[in-house]
Image (cartoon, rainbow, N blue to C red):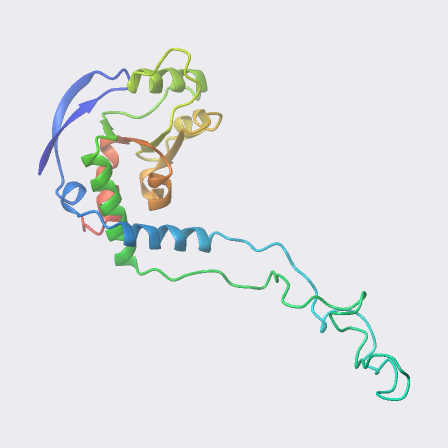
Length: 217
């Protein structure tokens, strides 16, 4: 186990704790992390663009004119893609399935890998209580600027806040921030971790994160 410092929202150290080995022992696997992220984005994809093929457009199936003897180009259907009112050839379809299957153990390994890298790079801070008394964006932004020792005139903080339990006040307060986002520990995924520079983790959610990494409790 690795001993880590615990902070409060005022960026003051309030104690130490032993971090479970799964958070630091996993080696960095960029290929696996990339595969899981691409699968996650593909599974969230909803195709909207849709064109009609020659089978979908309205029109008769009758041959426009006879094959030979007219001097005109031969045609077999007015619904052909080369006609103005014809269907579209090889156009986008909204019934295409982009989903990709990712095994549970792959997701667990990818999450453990990115967490270990973030901790090693010093981009994770563990907080004793990650919550707010009221859903005030101003209060949360002030705490985050103090936490990361940012300039007073800073406009945004790139951080993912991993809260334990519902954490509705924290989630509501983060909605108006440009790059900050609060998530419940049981909803954390590889994409959200990669998409944010810093992580603030409520220590009460560590057991939940460990379960997501495949450590049975």
